[in-house]
Length: 450
Image (cartoon, rainbow, N blue to C red; front, side):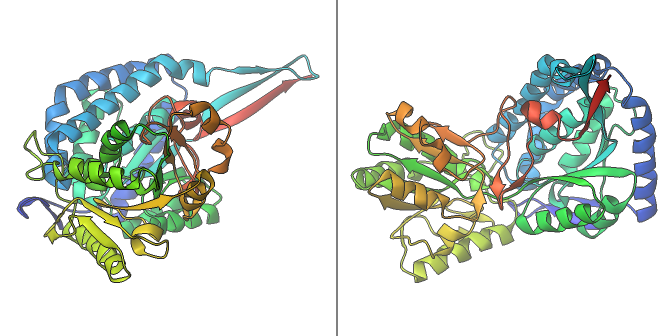
């Protein structure tokens, strides 16, 4: 048995029991049996269930948002926005999935050649707690529409959210086994990946978890998609609109209490703007309201667990010991960590060379664009970067300099159903969302007729 505790006030929420290995085996067999029918169901018929799911999401959006706020501390307005984003994703694939999956004709020497996209089978998703609905939907929806069935091992600390997701699919009328919540411990994941019923795995999580899952999958010659950590740079060029940039930068770092792989975690500001940026940014961050995540005016809630806040505290404190200066924040109370801004930061400090998964940000200055690129690339991660400048055309010629999965100009890095999402280096491999995402777990089958 394990308990779920509210990170805001440490109250008991619920108690759960992991299913047994024999129950896991039975669940996988049901999912495989469902795939044998679902995989041959026309795409337009699969999409009818997605339409029902959109209705269920709309109906249950407030219930879903509240459960998220209770279990991992996300402010209720942000939790509700996450649920609505899941609806947008469903609607995107309703409009585009048939075209993405249609047979593609190829010109070759024979009388006819074409490519078809066929589902692989049962796909395992290992999902994190920081976006308990969005992370699941962006994996599961395109995977299911492509004809696969999915089983999801969600993070234990948001087990209530995980149960609600499965109930949504059931309410939408999906046959049993198309989407299944797999309430298992981390130690049970290896056997699930190794099970011959499971054909591939997608993981969103830490480097350590990604390396473990990838090695297990590779040993069984199974495909894996990994969406891991990030330490995105946010570059403020000399000609940037500083007021607009500050406004975006606040959300880019402190939304969801900074608990996002694509949050802007390292700021680089041109030396001519540095003092003005720090003054304006500090003023804006100091106005953010922290408190009960169920209150609609709360912007910063607690971190999902106290130990996570302690990790951020250690990274900040160690950096201060090495010479960094705290401009704002720097204090922890249980799972709450104050929005924190640091200057006098060097590249050997934890707040620079580690992923800080919480509301703390180092701000460094640079003199040339080349220096900013070097600082941004000086990371083991490569998920994304934001660059703010008035000269967009000039910047477009330098996109190739960034070792990232995404470059956002005059905007914060975000995931969008229409845009491929994923990283390079230790941020993982493979892509989610858009056409690329729906084709990650398919057999790209070549047909040649002589």
